[in-house]
Amino acid sequence: MRAETFGRVATHHPKPLVIRGGLARTFGSLATFLAALFLLFGSYLLADALEHPIDAQAAAVLAAAFSITLAVILLYFLLKPRHGKRTRAVRLRRAE
Image 1 (cartoon, rainbow, N blue to C red):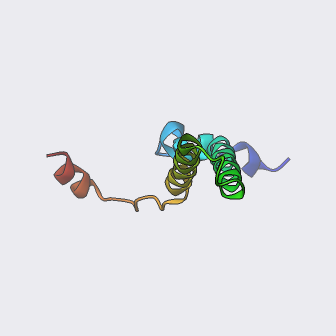
Image 2: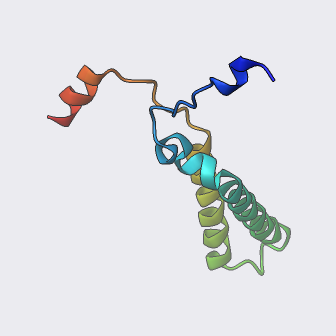
Image 3: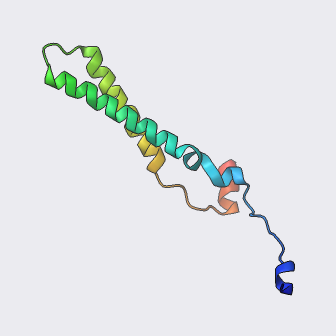
């Protein structure tokens, strides 16, 4: 074996793994599935209310709107861009 392979030193990343992971990366797939489920459920309720307008209940229409709104909010928080890297001076100024 070469001598270079024995001389490597493992360096750790300056940021902890908890900060690098974040909620969106950790639970992103679960939240996406939940958002799709809310969106499909709301669409189903709304389509049923539009298909049978005389039998439609107000609670079903409100539940559909609430479900679709929850799905859009979840997708927004998953897809919004993260803040860029801030310098130390900006962090200290913001903490004051």
